[in-house]
Image (cartoon, rainbow, N blue to C red; front, side, top):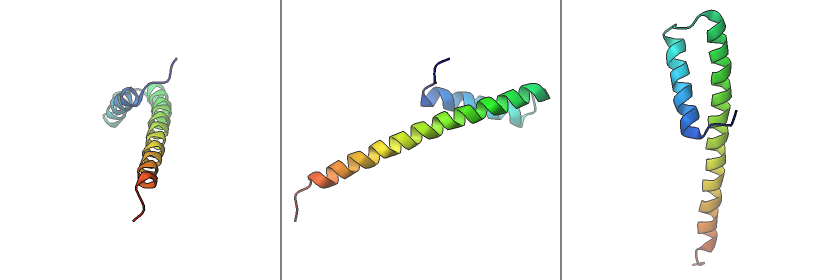
Amino acid sequence: MSTPGFEEAQKELEQIVERLEHGRAPLDEALALWERGEQLYRVCRERLDSAQGRIEELAKRVEDSRPAR
């Protein structure tokens, strides 16, 4: 099973949260959904952390390339 992209993981996580909030799953399924939700949360968090690091690096490059005053 391949790792989903951010948007795909976010969408699936939202669906899981909705199912759990509405109590539409028996206990065993709810536990499996919870575990899957944790996996998807980690995927989203890693993607966001990576994007933040890249943005900070790009911002630093821009700042470093500005001429001194």
